[in-house]
Length: 193
Image 1 (cartoon, rainbow, N blue to C red):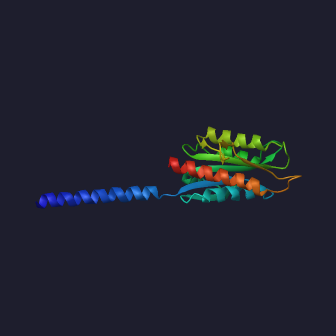
Image 2 (cartoon, rainbow, N blue to C red; image 1 turned 30 degrees about the horizontal axis):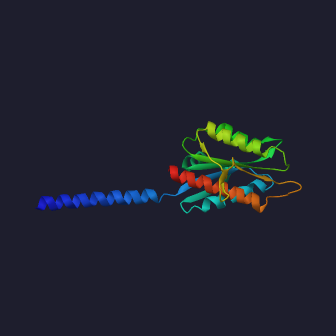
């Protein structure tokens, strides 16, 4: 009888350890790293919007870093990476390009992209696509914001903001796009973790 009682106690201990491990794993926060370059503050505003969207998910944390402040440890610790960059003559700004060229493979992370630019057809979407292609080449699963229109849903590749005339700065609508991007990246990263 003592052997049976002892075996039962061991069984209870093992079950308790398994339950606590499962709960611990379920409570792990998803860490999303927002890497951006900004010279005028507009791209930084969009990065803040992405951060707000990430924080809508109670199981996610956002870390904002300027492109020249990001370390290998930051990249390794991230479950998701969102890249943001202003548009210069229809292409990626040099600091972001250099960052992408020197940093390695980011396999199994979730990512997204956003861009700002001064003109209506100045290449903001081209920059978003270029950033997404760079993420895919580094092994990242890319996602974009999803919008619910009641009868149907629609998605986008990323978020952009026109920051020059006639719409100077970042509008509330453009910040909403950034928030939707952040929320989507956090949600998918959480599902995959």
